[in-house]
Image (cartoon, rainbow, N blue to C red; front, side, top):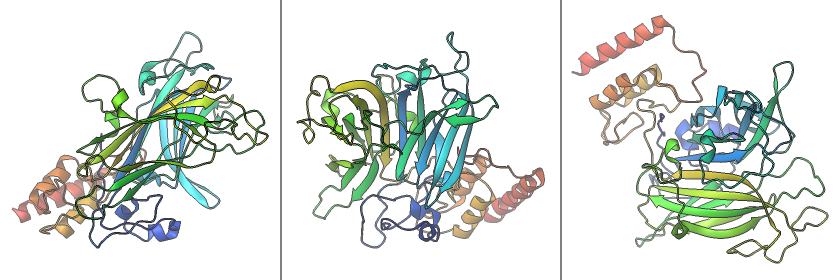
Length: 417
């Protein structure tokens, strides 16, 4: 796990334009929320990073050789980690689609060989429920994950197939119904009360209306809170040491709920512990198989109720188990990356030099001890050259540049000594 959440102070108003966001310091884009928030000057940021790990099956009619995660409203430089799925190639690139922008994480050349179709992920039309990470090494499905210190406004997932000319294309135009929550933070109102953290979930709507193909799904939610920030690789369920995803009956946050396609559903509220540093949820999503009207809206007597069990005949096949987390404090996940651009390089050294001696924690305070000093330079030097997921495909400095940086580092070291 590697990257550094940049720090920022104060909250960001909602629905800022792209140009307005880019005029702010990079770290100020971390806490994008679905509510308009305000706070006293120098109040700490609310949401420092979001991440998602999810199981899903190939329920398309054909074998798949690739997959694509589309993160709307998120820059590629903000994606600092991905889960190592069974593909030989992965790219993290920016896209612009009209007024929308975002990042596409594309996986190509499936390498989990099976006896049925070598090099392809086979269809599974009737998948069984998983516990969150059962598809890490299972044919017919796959486990994906990403972590970003900028919150996507929407996530869409597509399976890809490889055409005869070696290119990849989406299997169908509709994203799988794997909602990803948008987190909001409401500060405590004083008096020692706890802040509120709200998660809003919306089922992705298909680009085109298809009769008799409802876009509503069933959802069940488990939740826990931790007193520390979490990392992507920890978002695993099961009894193995280090797995932190809630799965016990006592950790159920909401029983079965029906989500209508395109309709936002919010849940959450005051933290159980006002000092919690992260919130972890596990979502289980299943198809809705009940009656629908001519516009695919569900016809059920239980639309606005939480149920212990869905009504008979309305619970369809398993769609996905999505394990998500939001960090409420900064987590130094790429030591030495003081600029937050996903690479430990000369820019971070210059930032350290600029902030050296500061008595308050700055961006170059690598060990978070409240001062930028020699220890932070050691962190930079020990991790020089480290690259986050989004920057992994970028060009590295030429050897001459590396030598120059090494010389500069040595000079700074002895001068500070």
